[in-house]
Image (cartoon, rainbow, N blue to C red; front, side):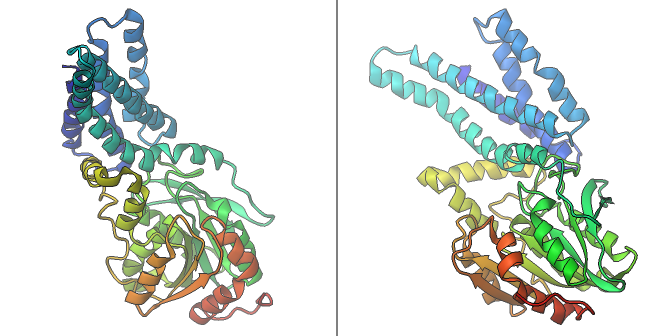
Length: 408
């Protein structure tokens, strides 16, 4: 019975996943609640549980209901996700302790404890991988980006996506009739990251729009899907900039970093096929172009257990309406437009080999490797010291502007 609580949680998540709910945040809240309630009920009904411990569990219920009612609330979903992981650890400890008491010799006790806790441990790690990477790791950073940095002359705007998300953004006006550039940041980041780019592009006369992806900064949402649903955010940004006064909507360029590169790569084929988009080229900084390899790199410490954990995580991701990261390939189709990729050779987050592979498989992808540059520093390094290749690339594909800063 002690070992069954995590299995009840898995069954609850499976039942919740059958509900006809489409939104990523709503499905996350529903499936995670399906895990939480069986664990809470099992904890409250545990033989010998004190009245105090039952009250502690009961007090968790209102915020969980709040997560169902307001699934885009970062605070509500963080409380729900943390509650699942906490109760899961508690259930594992209870299963191990209960199994320990069933035998006397030490080897038998250790064996029974391992057997009693093993199913729950497997489910906890598999669910934890998804909860951490899609919500828990993003929440603190979102709160830290509530006041994005701006320069004089810039103004805050709000974008609206096709699936009814409101996104925070900053618009930097350029020369009348000049092209526009949309800047997309990476995961667990915000639009302030691209402030140095906005300054350089403004010097070159471009109109610039940098925005917070859903689940980041001042934008709505609490769940990240690594480009699967964030493509709608990029489309909303392009649509807004294309219609802004003074912008030549037929000449739009894109620039993105890290996960923003995955968003852009996933969106490019459709943008290239739609002449109304106005998109002509993209500049990508250390893009996340192939997630199965990145995921394998992250869980390598699990050794031979990694495939089993990832299989379990894939089931959870499917229940949440997402393509598992072990199968998510943003470049399943050719981009269809000229792409300049810049990648630092010292990048320990996304291997440069992924960008080399991207350039090798598509003739329209041009790769520039930057010696001794790491992952997080590449936007600033390019803006300060390697701007000339970006300037030349944008000039070739968007047309030269009347005012260009001196190449540096």
